[in-house]
Image 1 (spheres, each protein chain N blue to C red):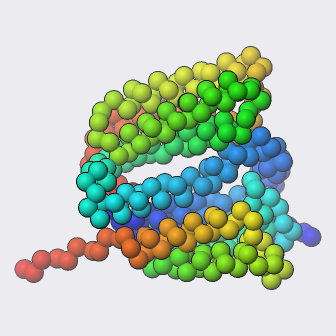
Image 2 (cartoon, chains in turn yellow, green; image 1 turned 30 degrees about the horizontal axis):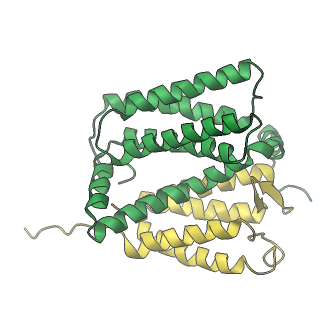
Image 3 (spheres, rainbow over the protein chains, first blue to last red; image 1 turned 90 degrees about the horizontal axis):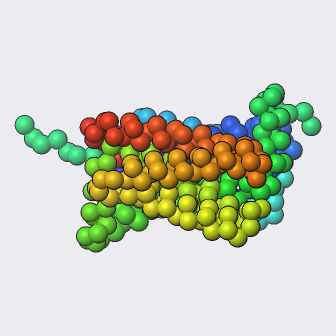
Length: 125
Length: 183
């Protein structure tokens, strides 16, 4: 089972949708509430970017690179989430974002480094 | 501050929904974490299979052998199950009896979703169709009888259930052919 490929399309689609819906509830730099998550336009752009990157990675076969990038990025975001919010006075990433970011990072790490399918080598002719 | 994007009627609708999300909030949170849970389950399955657990290897092989339509149906069932269980846990207005019924329904839907995705045993379509149909009828009766108000999450969940019913027929008609999306 190619977990990196599954990860790229699942999280790619989910983050893209979250980014798009986020603009409906928080189209500007003022913070809005998406379900229970604090978002603003910059946060939505970030969601949209990582989501679209996931879809592109799935379509171009760069799944492992995407999963590894997500693992590092979201691990950093998880740690930063414990700091003063909003981050740099711009993006709110505390509260319930922390467990979501942590889970995203852990699963990305598993998909990117531990469990992925190596491409089958073609037998010599 | 002026919005960076003008989202028009959709924006107003979603903003109203977000304010309205009150008693649907647990369902929406559960849906947010559903992809994480699915990915975690698949990772655990793969990990178990790689360390030599026979049961995990068997379930993984069954998952890999399942047709894409069955996986899609399983996803629809899992979405419905998440919403039902989350609302049950959040103690709905109908009281304990409704909470118990929702929890049972959600648990059964989740079990059938697992059955569809990782067990190569026939019969799940009949069970899923029966449970989904019963849920749709119950919701229609509850709304029609004034016991429940129409809300965005409820209607969206029922639309997913109707679509899942459609996939059940597709899953029945189309046998496994290729690897599909989530291989």
